[in-house]
Length: 221
Image 1 (spheres, rainbow, N blue to C red):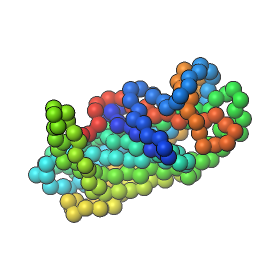
Image 2: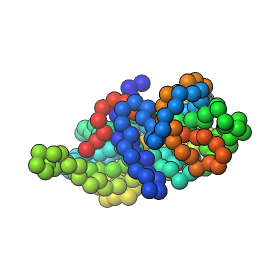
Image 3: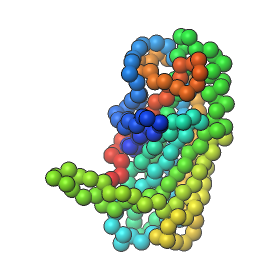
Image 4: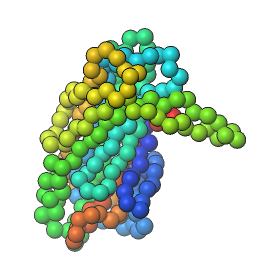
């Protein structure tokens, strides 16, 4: 699968940091150790029934928020959605990977099961957005603000290989049938050495760390 670039941002109380490059983590210290990695993969495969005025200047993209069940929230912007005179079915092939790392040194195995149970509280909020073309200030390209056209909240109650979900209209620019997006969700566990930096977690007494990864083209500006 072609993996598209994302603009990945961690939103939390008193903390905000853009994640760049491949599998970047947030931390103030680093160590090399054996870890259990819980991998959460989210994909946006296709978009259908999109009817929009193509004369509008700007770009269409999807923004979504991954909420792991704690105060932390990952915000992701996809690349621009290609539009044409016929938008009945659009392929996106966007994929993002989030990892929750549990250090094997000093961590109670029961915490791994605890974080798995939190999956029932997890969700992904999708927003179909339209952004006017950016402008330049002293030669620097500045992105314009975006507008929400449609939204949907997808609970992460079970692993989904593929599932069509309907978006609720939030703007008059959309018309015709209800827009649907094909998404995928899955979780798997693996163990291995990790040289990535540690981050603090909201769980008492454990050593969890959340990371996000991306690869591909630039996000939509």
